[in-house]
Length: 474
Image (cartoon, rainbow, N blue to C red; front, side):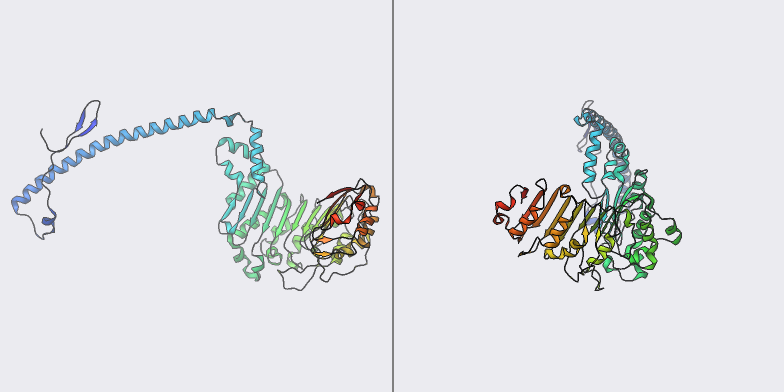
């Protein structure tokens, strides 16, 4: 049949064409804009054309349906072929030659590049969960990651107004780390903004409260516990009394208290009693020394104090943490081996008269931004017969006329057998020390003691002072 419409080639191989009917004269827009109806004869002709074109439309739909089924079949076959190609490339990939132990080492390096294997920050907007992400890559990686429960053991959560439910993620970590001890850090980045006891649940949010409760309920598995919250409110609100009674820390070895509070409320004593009764606790880090918290001092081997003698700006209490509380605590620590004080300030430091011996102390490090004389109360009080490493740091910009002074010299003299002294570090990068004082100190030390000196006038002190010593000048 002859027609004016262009045919469509459906198959070039068999020369199959779809030949449409020639288009009929359409109804013009001007006619459609006219408000009226066609004459009877024209209406009859239009109805016949409508039937013919509707039949033609069905032919188009039938051809398109047939073609779609063909293209869909081709798409399915193409996708299957692509998967086979991808699988064959995977089978030939050089990474398959790596032993599974190497994968474990690589994953361990990646996971330990973060402070914890699960880190939640910014009200839940920022989450770093490397083990979980690695387990989603493929079955091989999932098998490797899940076969290392130690990959899932460290959890660090900022619980302030947690805006998303992290319970599924928490439960995954707790399940995957089954049989392992945990390293848990709970922090509240806005702890200083919380002042009303009744609104602490709002301050944390529903998800923050549930996350805290879940982590505290794992106390029996916690080996390292870091704590940076508003203690007076946090511990009073989160756990019910039955849950408090069942809480204990049987494997806790290290407790890091970053809270910086100056008192212990009666409602939170249940928590500190459990810390006190932790049988394996040996290491404590705190912003300040706290006599109110009765820790198992007799079993501690390591104490780190961030600040001594400085008022915590987070509190309007006017309370200063001086030397006397620290010395009273130290006198109760016969097994102490490591003592580090991050910053000693001069404000209202008392001059205690207590004297005691730390028989097991091997490492002592003290720092200040003030004159090194702020160390005198400490140096005058303690004797350390087993001391091996001594580090003294002052960042004061000043010429010192009388340091090393007698309290420091006396401390060195009382350090038992000086043959035990492996190294002394004097870090005064912006201060000048008098040569005669340095010479007196070095005369007490055996030549085997390694002395590291970071002093502004290190060259002007003179080679005679350093002769015969194992000196490192920086």
